[in-house]
Structure formats: C-alpha cells, structure tokens
Amino acid sequence: MKYMFVTLLALFVAFPALCSEDGGKAKVSFAYDLDFDMQFDNREFYKSAFTSSMTVFGARITPSAGLNLRQTDGTTHRLMIGVDIMKDFGASPVSPERAPEGSAETDRRLSNLNLFRELTLYYSLDRQMGKTGFSVTAGIFPRRMAEGNYSRAFFSDSLRFYDNNLEGLLVKVSRPKANFEIGCDWMGQYGTFRRERFMIFSSGEGKVAPMLSLGYSAYLYHYSCSETAGGVVDNVLINPYLKFDFAHMVDFQILSLRLGWLQAMQNDRELVGRYVCPGGGELDVEVRKWNVGIRNELFFGKDMMPYYNTIDPGGYKYGNLLYPGSPFYRVHDDGTKGPGIADRLEVYYAPKIGSPYLDLKISAIFHFNGRKYSGCRQMVSLCFNLQELLGRYRKH
Image (tube, rainbow, N blue to C red; front, side):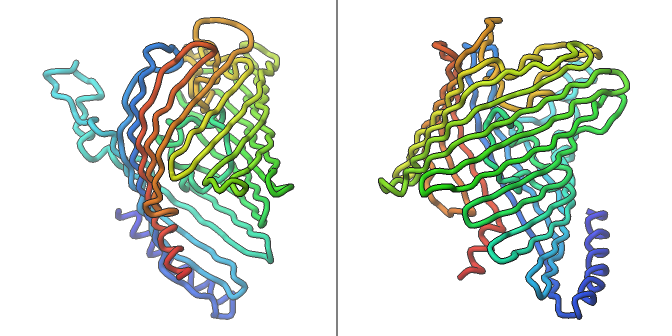
C-alpha cells in the first residue's frame, strides 16, 4: 500500500504539467475502478483423461485508483494503479500434523497474505475521431479489456479466471459496424527455470450485411527456453469465421450461428524441427430467450495440441503452458490418431439483474468427444464492474 500511495502522489504532481500543454484547459479528475468476480465450477471428468475432476470455487476483487486527464479535443488519458486480490475457497493452511514437513499446504500465508496476487499498473489513451474510436493501453491491466471474439481453442475458462491480467500492450479500433484489436502479453521472463514466453494476439469483426459478419482471431505464441530447459516452440493459431445473427428476425435475445476454421502451425525446433499443421472446422450455435439459453460448440478436426504430453529437454511436460486453450481440443484421450469430434453443450440461465454492470450466469455443461461422453460441469459465475455502473449513471 505504501508503494501505491507514492505512485498516486507522483501522478498528482505530474498531471498538472500535462494540463499546461493543453493551454490549461484540460480537466483532471480522480479515477477509480472495482472488479469483482466469483466462480463456482464443479468439474466431473471421471470418464475422461483430458483433464482432472475438481471443484474450482473462488473469488477475486481488483480495486484500482488513479487520475483522468481529459483534453479539449476529447482525448482522455488515464493512469491507474491497483491490486489483484484472490482467494480459492478452502485453500487454508493444513496443520503440520496432517501434512509432511515443508508442504506448501502448511504455509501460514495461505490465511491472508498470499491473497495479493499481482499489482496492476497501466496507462490508457482513448480518443474518438468522428465515427472511429481509438484506444491504447500499456502496462499490467485487466484481461477483460481485450474484447475480441476468441474460441475456447485460444483461451480456456481456467486461464481466463486465474490469469486475470495482461502484461504488455493493447490497441483497439472501433467503428459503428466493425472492431479490431491487437495486443501483446508477456507471459514469462527468461530465468533459471522460467521459460521466456510471449503472445501476440489479434481479433476483428465487421458487419457486411444485416445478419452477416465476417471475423477472425489469431495468435502467435513464442514458447522459448530457460537456463535449464532448452528448445523453442512456435505456436500459431488462426481462426477466420462467418457469423450469422437472426435474433432481430424472431424477437430472441440471441439466435446466432458462427462457422469458422481453426488452423494451427506449430514447430518444436529442437525435438521435431518442422511445422505440423493440424486444423478443423468449428460450429458455434446459441439460442437465448427469456434469459434461458442453449449454446453448442462443435469442433471436428485433428488434435490441435499435438505436443501436449511431450516432455521438453528440461524434463517437464509442455501441457497447458504451451497450450492455453481448452484441453478438449486434443480430440482423443486414448491415443487414437486422426480426426475426431469435440462437443461442448451448455444450458444456462442468465437473468438481467443489473446488466451490463452485473452478470450472473448459472450453467450446466456437457462435454463429448466423438461418441464418448467425457463429463460435465456445473457452473455459477457472478461478475461486477464498477465502471459499467458509473457509465450508466453518467448517461442519465
């Protein structure tokens, strides 16, 4: 907290200098934000080897504060600092009498000191130029700021919850019928055991007809070496898609169909030395009426994570460090080769309690691979965003 106070004090000193550059007419104001996210995710995958059965139940709160500077031309600068606080429910210290000496579960910091996960610290610029919106965010900032439409082959539900922040840069451009973003997330600094890792990601979508949009998502993931583990893996994933929206024709909240192609290009430079290029088609259909919805995501193609179980030169499995997407895109869990099916069926209830600043969703999710039932999940999520609430009041 001492460092947060010093940083805020420095911002108050620095911002008047920016005002003088704008003829003294720029407006400086105190800025604050608050995110709350609670997730309950009971995973029962005893019929599958893709991932383990477990219950994820936890909550995080991310308060932040800083300064806004609004210039006379409408350009807004924001400097923010905050802290990411998270607790996995039940992750309390175990008595030394019940665990081996030196076990991480006996660490007394699990009570409260270990809740402070990460500092957030970022600068953002927003400017509206006619019908075009432009924004740049740099630093350590919430992942929710990246608003692209990414398949679960890109980012799993677990990653979105536990890796809550991006560390790098994000640029966004928006038009009335189109949006685009590109960003860089620096995920690992080169170290003795820590691999150097970074990802450049991008997404865009534009409406070309009343019911048709064209879009894409992509990333370039550089999974490099550490002092103790050599080798480099290049992991590229591209997803062009068509999206049809029929909701306005039948008075539904959502009635959409998204048809896309997932194409990967991966090269383990040391162990393989050539690119492998698995791919497949994905159909995403969602229907929602009276806050009750059904969503089915069907993938047919090859194993999108061919190196998942590969042991690297340091003796460690690549696993989800190399593949941040849902493990079900491995298609087969029994060693079978060739194309296969991964299907995710979700039935949910999402009441409009305080939309858009408060989201509550209750879901039952069923996973299938080929003709095999892989398991199910029961999920409850509750998300609150203060900026959305404040924005609503400003409009009124």
